Image (cartoon, rainbow, N blue to C red; front, side):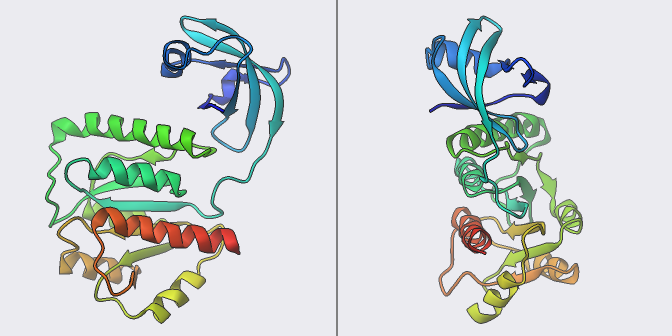
Length: 248
């Protein structure tokens, strides 16, 4: 069943009515060709989702009738921030899509010393808009209750400063200690804590960047004996955290 998001002010539980506006109107009308009577799900972007039927379709809005409301448990018990070194080509698209599917709360593209991709200031807004659209599509597909925010690309120093506002900072690094140490670090994470994951670009972290992260309290972790690509590393950490946090 199709899934959409609606602004809280467009949800009226007294009259059992929801109004969808914006780009989703065109998607419902002209792409999916849905009609009055068709059923769909709507999330308020916070904690409730609504099973609805379409009661009316107009050029600028779609009106829905609420059948029932529920409070599902789709989100991870911790807010996980992915600080991703800028990757070239379509890799960033893939990384953002899969990060959202795996439960990331936010994605922050980061310009690092060894980044192959150099994002010009004139392209930041356009790229960010595209990545946010990818995040929204992935959120709908994976039944997320919210659309994770994709931030405009920041410098490495800015990314570290953002991470200092979180409870835990993790830095997967090929020179980190063995799996036993990493297991202990993961097991220290408690539901409700916020976690920042720092992933290097194609060229990996510069040594000065790792030194900065560790000096600011980040914990270096290993992902095994193999060297993972940048588009694989973040997904691996997210998968481990998802399994661990949801299994507690």
